[in-house]
Length: 237
Ligand SMILES: [Zn+2]
Image (cartoon, rainbow, N blue to C red):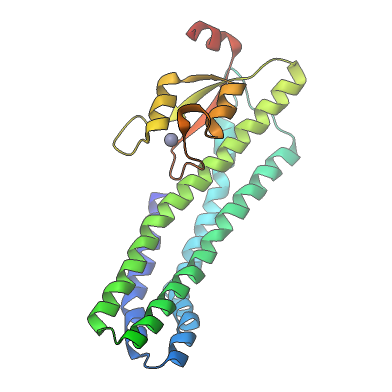
């Protein structure tokens, strides 16, 4: 993920000067309209698609790694092949949107350039505005990937729990785990980390925002629920 974020930033930085030069040359609305295609071409040539494709490829190992991690735990994850495929489908759906970010960025650049032409914005100001779009995109990609990853990893645990529930008839208990408290931790995650052990009902309440009055989805959340045994849960009471 760190490598991807760095490479993504590098691509956007490399493309920035070219995009600014292109936007600066645009002197009527027609040109501003074709800017979107040209911007996308510049991003592609700077390596956008390659970097994203490579990341998608590596990210497919995350699911296998998570299953391996919990293979010998108190409640080992058990899956049918179709379960894993379901999680992989969710992963693809979430991550393929990374490709669409490129189009969104090109559209914003086209908009600001058209606006610049109409308001006779200075070249310096236009360059500044385009730089801002790039910076927002770089920050957003981290948030996006973290949030997406959390969702499909959680899905993996939820499916595993569902199998356990159905095969044993037992209730499922959860522990809230992830990054320790720091400046980025949001209040409801702090409360959930303190609460730590959850019943199924509590987990649902937390996830739909009822418990701790939380906003959902939790963008950039670095926490998830993993199954624990009833004994562990009871010992914690
Ligand atoms: Zn969190």
